[in-house]
Image 1 (cartoon, rainbow, N blue to C red):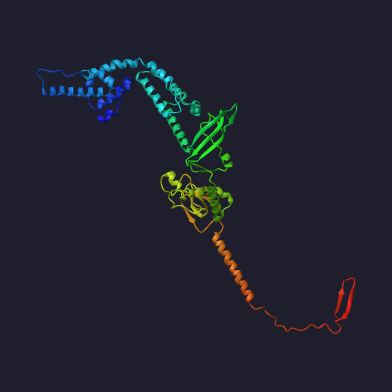
Image 2 (image 1 turned 120 degrees about the vertical axis):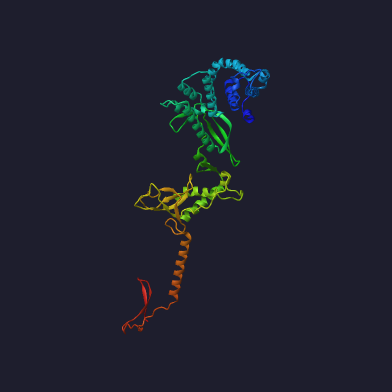
Length: 478
């Protein structure tokens, strides 16, 4: 019982009704609360044993009850009320004094509710609980307020960063209850915390801001917001490096910090989205490694350059699970706090036979389709495949995710293995060389006809002529 008593707040003169209920809960648990409503049994000259025990029990319970009430008060109030004779007398003194003070504080409750404003520095749900506490005091003093007015007032009290949420709630046609409003606020705050966790990959430090006169920023929903200033900002990454951004606009109406990815790429940075993570780097050696990996994967698999994006994501996926020279631990282990499992790793570009699942599978038709392995799924433990042959379930070039697949490790996308190509070319060259050697070494075929000298006759003469077509000298027959 002592441990339960320690959890009670000390009564210091405020919120008597709340403290009174908590104290009654404790006294009821101890089974001594009845002494607050009953008088002490009178002593008799002649009394039975049962009457004596009843009176002694009442005296003992009264002592325990008054002790718990006094111990639940602050030291200053303890000194004032410790001279009370019984627990009932002490309880009546407290009610007569502090219940009248609570009755006179109704106007302060109204003022407290009307003047309450939420701020961005505290949790919205914590502030919502404070407002509900004020409303509970309303009920304790039998003060009633229409629930629609309460809900509308709480929406107006939301902090400035909840401007869009306030507009959406006010434009709803149907009325919502106070409980429904609390659920909406809780979900919205959880979504905001998740967004802040995803985007909190660095710490920003704003240095100098120059005021802008009349500048506006065009938003994606065709609206405009006012630019209050322009300056520089330093972003400190988790690796310890600092990136300084120049000409950064200060726009209070934009709730999130926005960075232009195309502009960063223009200055040599490389940005990669892997699942729910964003990786920004400017490591020339890392970029060169990724480029070489992508070229090797495309060349080895026989796929065209149009699939460089899938190859890049797979290369990043593998590098995050491989230790380097500087750190003996993988990036995956630093992020997830556990070692990665590499038993499911496959060679990129393998041909595979993927099983067709419901609802695509038909009673009469193909149960398996030909595809090419394109990488690993982001949000599940599955592989990504691209359909390369016509079938009745999926269109060609469709990317699907599945875990039921048979990999054909000796077969790539309609192009033979590079080693097999080299071996076949060398073998064909050796065959040609051997055939040429055979032809060279073999004896030429000779004709079996007898050779005869040609005879031109006795009247045939041959002259030796010296000169040109215009002039010539004849030296006579030879």
